[in-house]
Each structure stands twice: as C-alpha cells, then as structure tokens.
Image 1: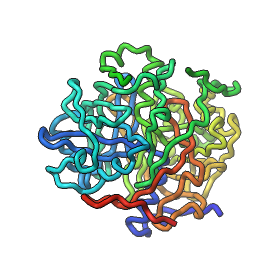
Image 2: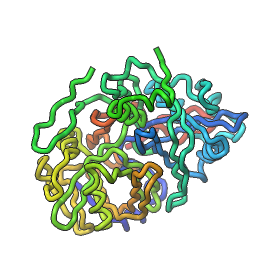
Image 3: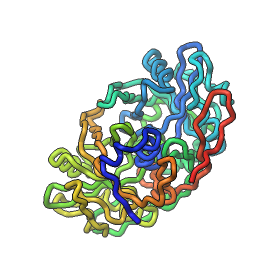
Length: 212
Length: 212
C-alpha cells in the first residue's frame, strides 16, 4: 500500500512525530562529530547535516540550529573561526549519540561520553582522537536561512586519515574505515558496498569501476 | 599508519583525484533522483547533496552546480518553481547513476535509463514511479554560495511512500524501503541498522529505542 501525505496532512502531525518523519525523508546522512572550543571547554556535538559544497577550494557545509543543544558549538565556531568534523566509527555510535544530551556549557562532552580530544598544530579546535577521518576547517561563509537555522561553510585546512584506505583515484574508502550513517534523528547504520561505477556516458553501457 | 594532509597537499593534487578525495570526506550521502520538467522534456538527475533544513515548515536543501550536467535541472527548477526528490532503491542504482551522463537537453533521462515518470495532481514536476519514497517540493529559497554553486531550499508539498514502513513515532524506515546511499562520487551502498537510540540525557545511560 503506497500512500500519499499532503502538506496539510504533514502540518496536522504532532510535533515530535513530524520531526521524526521529515528527518527520515532526507535519506541516509553522514554521522559526524563537530569539535569546537571556547578556549577552556572542548565541545563535541553529533551532526548529520554535513554536505559537500566544493572540491577546489575544498568546502563542506552544515546546517546548525541556534536555539538547541548545538548553540554552544555555534558560539564557539563564531568566536574562534575554526572547528573539526570527525567521522563517527560504527564501534562507538552510542558515545556519539550521547553528545546530543544537554550538558552544561562548562562541561566537556568529550569527558562526559568518553572520547579523547586531540590537537594538531594546524588548528585550535579539538579533534576526536578515536575518529578514523578527522577534518579541520576554517569558517569561510556563514548565513541564516529562511527558517532561522544557520548554514556554516568551512574551508578544509587539513585532513587526517589512514592512507591505506585511499584508492588510486583519490576515493577514500570510508566503508573500510567503518564510518557510520544516520537516518531520521536517532537510527545508526553501517554500510555494505553494492557497486562503484565508472564515469557515465550517454548511450554507452555503464561499467563498474576498476579500483585498487 | 594514520597520516595528515595539509591544505597545501590538497591544493597540489590532480583535479580529478582531489574531487574524489574531497567528495569522500562528507561521509555517506543520500542517493536521490531529482525530477524536473521544462513543460516538454522530463529531466532526471542523480543528486547526493540533499540536506535536512527543518521540519516545521518541512524544508530540504540541496547544492547544485550550474555549469555541469545539473544545469538543465536547475533551469527547470527556476522556471517552474517545482521539483521532486525520489529515493534511489538499491535494485536500480545503475539506472540512477546513468542519469549523470551528459544527455542532450531535449532527451529525457527517464527514457534513456529506463525509469518511469509519474505525475500526481499535487505538482507539475515528474516523480520516479519506481521510487519507494517520493517527495514533491516547491522552491522556497535560492541563493549562490561563495564558490558559485547554488543552494536550493524547497518546501515539501507532498510525500508518497508505503505506510507500512512508518514506525509509531513517525520515523520512516528507509532501510526497510531499500534506500541507497552514496560515498565519494560513484560508490553506492546498502545499509544495515546497528541501533536506534532513545533521547539522550546528561549522566543517564543511553537506552535503545523501543520502536514498532
């Protein structure tokens, strides 16, 4: 039974129910921990809204909600101008999700959930030591969207990962590195590769990619 | 061997290699087909940049590249003001990826790859009949980002899916509906649920969710 929900149907839903449904519609999302600091407390927040903006210069975007548990991270980012994104490993999705609790401003989510801050000399924001893919960013653009959420675009300053997972063509095998994905607000998934395709051309049969 | 690449290292990479690497860093991404029309030709484009913007009103964003194969879709969206997003099923990822080929403007990707346009009376843009999750949107905001890519935010007008996949709390089980995810530019994945967590509270052990 396939069924249709109109906008009126959606508007009539109870708030939490609607949040669960609408958050499921965007499909599978990257599970990342956002690391930031106010100079004293190292902050960590789970985030599922990371989006690729461009490769040259290397840019990642994310959507932030200023009036939620994300407020401290957003304040830190605005203040310091730097932040990190750290892929969530399938082995510690519970720790990652626990960062969504409303801790006090002076309480570090690193300590609270049992993850380790790590600083490189390239950047003043804390990485998650346990993360297999660490990305250091500098704020490049920041603006408010129509619903008062905020979009932050960061320019990648450095990346830290195991080079064994890098294919010959530059593809980083994040499945081999056990990066988790999220659906809805609270469902965590591991992945299984189905295929990797070659560059598609009109009226030519699509090939599988020959990768290392 | 964990290794670090600085911004200088990234800037020195060959263009295609860098595109593959940077596109891998954003993590697992939603695989969706963007349906649009110029009134004559039904256009279809694979897109992996869908992002949740808000639940009330229900808003989805996406990043588009105006000087690529996405140009026709973007023109249609601007002209018509409506578009659809259709979850890619793991059974036909090859057809979905084939829409990334550079077809002529008057050639429909639906016909070229073997998917079926479907129109509801709620919206003038074509859905993918074969898709298990169909989302109809109206353009709500549109602007250009610092690297000349464009962000389109759409307000959801209607959603079509099998209600059997809807949990009691509003979560739509997109894994049960076989929605695919993408990593990098061309790797397609299926998912396997690891856990669904309850609302996290400070200093309280995180619970698994009791779902239907």
